Length: 265
Image 1 (cartoon, helix red, strand yellow):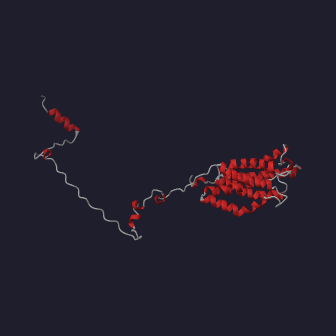
Image 2 (cartoon, rainbow, N blue to C red):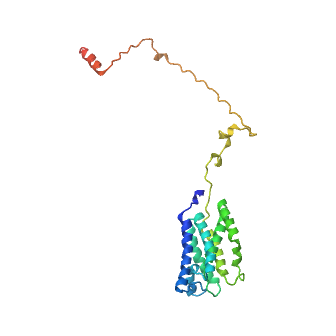
Image 3 (cartoon, rainbow, N blue to C red):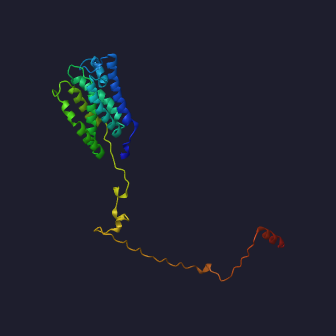
């Protein structure tokens, strides 16, 4: 796949912005109309708690909780839709569902809410996928993610902060890694602009490289040999010493008059 695979589209800005605005809209509904969506979160190992697998990423307990998740989502979703545009939608959907299911299995007996699980899915996928491809632009993206969000790895361990869902974070990290194997590795190749970038390039056939010797000194090309053409002898059969006289007629009228003057045979 060539470098032009990375194209800026409206989805790079539109999808992250819409997703984050929707989270704020849900939180506004809670404040404006007094709703309590926390019970729609993930309650591990209960049938009613399964609804949280779908709804929990859109529910937040406080303004600070929502704000802390909004900025990473904007950055990571934009990077996802720019560098992995074809896989982006599947990563989001499968990331939410699968990380939610694992949280439902291993989580503590408490409501687990927030989009942090999806954030860990995105961080994990972008980091590990970039390393797997070994493509310089995606590796650079992986290193950028480490610099920005590398400290998040501590929050996948229990007892680091009892107020957060480390189970959701750990689930997102695992699912992000799993999705890198689910989606096939994309092969990237650099766009060839010059002949010397081709694998079958031979400098000996290059007119420019022929102007340099083994030490890199500029030399003049040898003058081409002048090959004299052999004279072609004409067969005497096609030669004649008899003069041929041509009678040119100016126009068609003269031709007709000349023909009329001839006697009939």
